[in-house]
Length: 114
Image: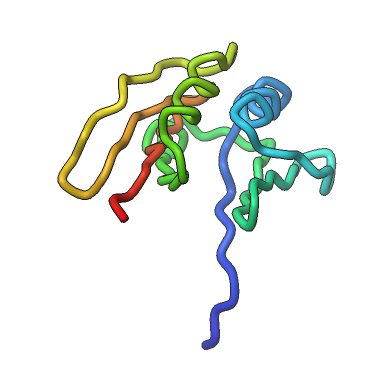
């Protein structure tokens, strides 16, 4: 098997709110179907799906690596649809803050140490 790409499918409870959330934090959307939207930022892509399962949503996590965490934190802080955001924390491997989306999905926004 020669893998050339992997994309995850992010759940949504209110599809329109989730689409707005990911747009607010810097992703560009592209219509795929009425139940699926492709989101892109640089070379990174994922699908937002019109599908909700509480257990999946509450345990869903993504690590999003950024080049500049302070600007990312400022942008994410302004989101109207986030459910929670933490301050930036220094770790041995870099910096991170945690951002929870509309269905409780957890985004680890990370700037890795170079």
